[in-house]
Length: 570
Image (cartoon, rainbow, N blue to C red):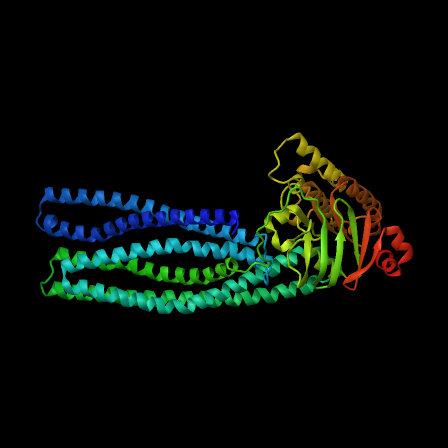
C-alpha cells in the first residue's frame, strides 16, 4: 500500500470521526428538542389543572413563564441540531465524492470499466448525496425515537393503558414501515441505474456532437437518447409510485394509531380516570406523536434510497484495479529507454521494440487497433496478455503506477480540454503564478504546438474561455492546445498520438519542426501515419499486422518499403 493511499485512508478516517461527533451532537440536541416538544402538552395540562381550574393567577403566570422558557429551548435546540445534521450530511456526501474521484483517478485504473463517464458522474453526485443524507435520516430517527419514548413515559404517568398502547404499538408501526420500504429500495436502485445510464449516453452524445453532425447522424443519436430517456423516466415513475404508496400507507397506519390513543383517552376521561388537564395532555401527546411517526416513514424512505445508492457507490470504490500495484520507485534521473518484448495485446502480436532514450521515434501502423493497444501498454492502462514492457530496463509491472505516470505521459489524440481559459488548460495549477521560468516555458510550448496562433485569434488571448470540453474551439485548435499542454508538462518520456489530424499541411509541418526542437534530447514517441511528423523523426518503426514490419528513417522506408508507402502516403 502506497503512502498516498495510506494518507487518503487517514483523511477518510478523520472525516468519519468528525461526522460521528456531529451526528452525536445533532442527536443530543434533537433529543432535547423532542423532550421539550413532548413536555409542552404535559405542561398545558398542568396549567389547566393547577392554575386555570383552580383560578390561581400566580401559578398561571409561573407556568406560562415555564412554557416561554421551554419554547426558547425548543427553538435553539432545533436550529442547532438541524445545523449539525445538515452539515453532517453535506460533509459525508463531500467525503464520498472525494473518495469516488480519488478511485476514478487512481493511477491503477479499473473504476471506469464498463461504465460511461456520465454514469460515474451520477454516482459521484446523486448517489453520494443520497448516501450523505442518511446521516440526517439517522439523526431524525433518533429524534423520533426520543420523542416517542418521552411521550410513552408521560402517557404511562398519566395513564398506564395509554402508555402501553404507545410502547407496544410503535415497534409494530416501525416493522410495517420497514416492510413497506422494500419495494421502494428495489425500484430506487433501478431508477438510479437508469438515470446514470441516461446521463452517460447524453455525455457520450454531446462529446461526439460534431462528429455526429459531420456524419449526418443527429436524428439517430436523438432517437437513441429518447429511448434511453424514456426507460429512465419509466423507472423514475415506478420509484415515485412506490414512494407514494409507502408514504400513504404509513400515514394511514399512523392516523389509525393516533385515533386509537385519542379514543382510549376519551373513554378514560368519561369514566373519571383522567382529569380535564390530563385528557388535554393525552390528546396533545397523541397529536405530537404524529410528527415522530411521520418522521419514521420519511426515515424509512431515505434509508431505502440510501441503501440503493450506497450499493452503487460501493461498486465503484471496490472496483478492482486494471493493473497490479508495483512497489519500486522510478529510478532518477529517467533516461527514457523503452523496450517491448513479445508483447501481445489487442492488435499487437508478439511485438519486440527498442525505443532509444533521448530520441524522437515515429511509429506508423497499418491497423489502428495496433496503435491503440500500444498506447495502452506504454501508458500502462492495461498490462499485456503476454510479454513485458520496460522503462530503463525495469518492467513497468514493478514500478509504482503514480511515479510511472509522471515519467511517461501518453497524450491521446481524443483527450479533453477542461472548462476554463486557454492558459489554464496549458499551464498546470502547481506552477507558480507569474514565475518567469514557468511563463517562458509555457510560451515555448505554445509556440512549438502553434497554440500561440490560436490565442492570437481569440478575443482575450490566453485568458479566453474555451468552454466545456473546448467546444468553442475548432478541431485543429483543440489539437494544438492539447499538444501544448503535453509539451508544457515536460515528462522524461512523451508519447503523442496523431496530434495533427485536424490541421492544414503547412501548420502540420511547422508543428513537426516545433515538436522536434522542443523535445530535443528527450525521449519522444509519435504514433502517427503523418508523413510531415514522421519526416522529422530520428527513427521510424512500421507495425504491420501486429508485428514490426520495417525500421529505418522515413526517407529510406518511403523509398524501399511498399507497405510503408501505402500506409503513410496513400
